[in-house]
Image (cartoon, rainbow, N blue to C red; front, side, top):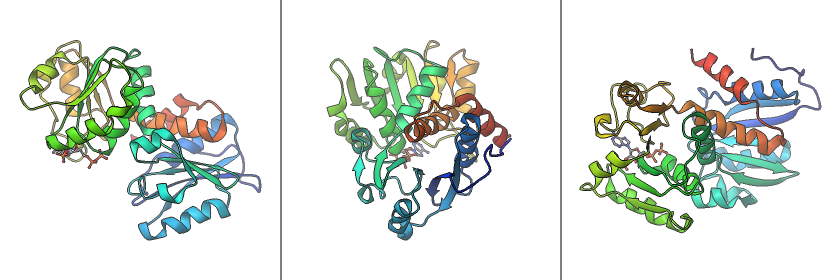
Length: 290
Ligand code: ATR
């Protein structure tokens, strides 16, 4: 299943993912499956890069003509000043997860937020325009998603966070990207219950409920209306307790695996210009998780 269609030869084009740690990454399995499916002679490998080695690695991208790189924790910010250009969306988000190498010119992109939105629209909520959205959490993951959701012209995005000041900062720093008619603001503790009850979509971007803390939930789903779509970025476990209790109450749910698949799909498309074989990518990742 995880075989390369092409033997690796002198024409093989190199791709990589970097992070620290990186050993658990599913990206090599997913991307090599995508090359297999599309008949592209690409090879995608994982490199464990420590902070101090990042500049040497970037020099290595150019030296070895690596066509594309995915960047994960903890390098998504630190890599930015080492690149030649940053896509405006990645600049606004303040993080890069994908690098495209055009003959030595390295451009940084962020496909996490748009990957999330593509997954949400495909799998749970085709129309986001005019919707009331609640985001739980105000960290790096929330930032990318809020930026991408704002492009869809929702009626409002309300930010709820344990540390309210961080939600306020996130709201004001992305205010400039609100289209006309959309409202983006932090939710005060007094407003929280009312806002949650009115939400069309609630998204958990916190780590609450992630393995091994699978009994935790970020919010009591009895506060939500039955028509609310409930989404969780976590994909380990594939279905969190948050989603299970929402499903029990009859709500539509959306898990985090799709975000991972589609952030990779966008990266693949930026590098190759070929439509990503999304279902084959999902199948191979699911098989590796079970
Ligand atoms: P990420 O890049 O995954 O978003 P992060 O930037 O560290 O990670 O942000 C984590 C988010 O999850 C924050 O909003 C954090 O809340 P605080 O700003 O109050 O720290 C939230 N979070 C993490 N653990 C939490 C918990 N047990 N309960 C509530 N919120 C939690």
